[in-house]
Length: 314
Image (cartoon, rainbow, N blue to C red; front, side):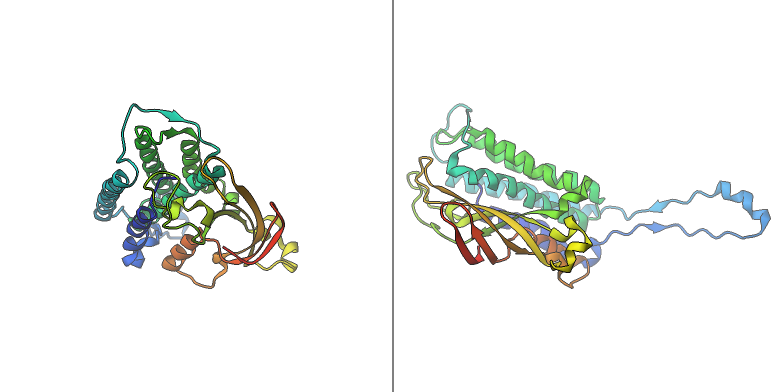
């Protein structure tokens, strides 16, 4: 996943934090035109002439323009960074590679996660600009996918890399997930999450001159799928399972040698549901939704390559 952590933080800050300076912009409530009717019989025929309609706030085009400018500016800035960090070598004809086994596929899981969280960040900005939520979901997912595929396309001309079909497929899946959640709310019970504990950060990579950054420190990363158990099993289950406790399955890697070798680990553990925090209002909800992409340190068991218990799994 050749996408810098600095780049991701920039985009998240621009599209999540900055638009929230006015809390009133995050809550969209349609106003119903007031209709006064007399209850005498003479007025009843007039009911056929009543044309009530919902009036929605118009989008904040100034904020939209600012977000659009920030989006383009972020792409330019990230391009300059990537140009120096990854694309500074020889360039050749566009080529396609099949690298599903690269880094034991944890890279592919990251390519699902990245557009999902980017789409969330973009949707927060669009909601602040009073864009219809459903429309905003489509726009934000498309923008996240466009950005990810742009990076893949540039990789295709780098002799050291190539356009990865596996990366692109996972990019599409990750960008599509928020759309599926919107149309099938049941999927909100399955939350992709990320945790990180530096392992090889700053060390030399397997490529000449490469310094590992967060997104390349694969052995420090774990990706999780956390489940809202009570929502799946109903009220009877709530008698012995607290609402705040989620069940999670995680994936991580160890001892990568750069040639396809290493160990892949599966974890089963607990996670915390930020939605249960008694914090209300649009700003607090935005932060709860955003932290929902981060795995909370809780007990877990590794069930592969030797069973091991972790009191706080990162």
